[in-house]
Structures are given as structure tokens and as C-alpha cells.
Image: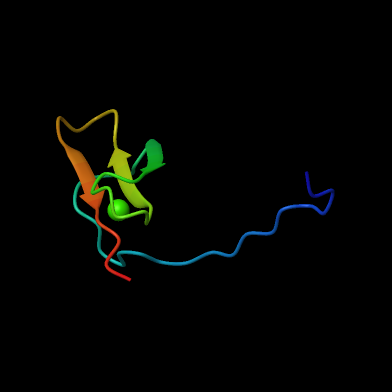
Length: 55
Ligand SMILES: [Ca+2]
């Protein structure tokens, strides 16, 4: 395993997301194409938001 610390950078995937503040964010490959997709959920909302990776 690599001993170097992980580095992340901030990237806006949707400047005007639907719903309210997303309290839960998950990353998973929902489409099976090997690229991560993002799932967001706010406790106050009844729906789940999904961003499919189109890169
Ligand atoms: Ca995917």
C-alpha cells in the first residue's frame, strides 16, 4: 500500500443542485461503466439525486 497521504481537490458537479442541502453523499458506479457516479440525499427531502458520470 502507498504511504503517501491522499490528496483531494474540490470540484463543482452541479452549481444549482435540485433539492436542499445534501446530508448524505455516496459514490458508486451505478451504470457499470467503471466510472464513479454520485448519489445525494437530504434528510428533509423525499427524493434522491443522482449525478451520472459523463466524462
Ligand atoms: Ca458509472
